[in-house]
Image 1 (tube, one colour):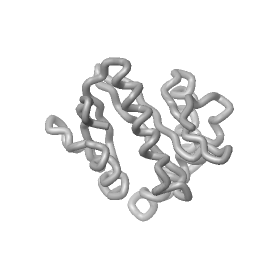
Image 2: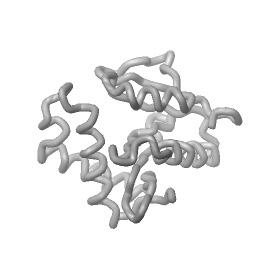
Image 3: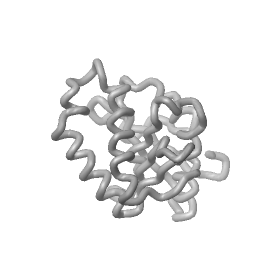
Length: 158
């Protein structure tokens, strides 16, 4: 089931986000950059704000938050700011369902194009996004150590 996140989900959302990020940042960045108490507190504040805006979706499986996605508009462009799945739930369709839900929301709102940034060492996520129609953003293909991808929404995209 995909649903909007609520304040009651915040602990699960932050824990899932922290665990998922560790899988792709570990060995590439200092642990404090993604596991340190200051970073976890910053992350929690960001997730609380996004949940409050109503822009976080949860995938619930067997009574637990198994995946999360967050999106929002920046400078007139829709951004998929987060999409994470519990590592124990990888390859079970959770990410695809969250992606489909986001695309449906964007289409209903008249969004024609979306962007995202993905860590350049996270090849698993890059493959997921490519399989869902995301391509390098021709205007801005990189932002530091992240690739910038773009999705053009149309009837055949999803």
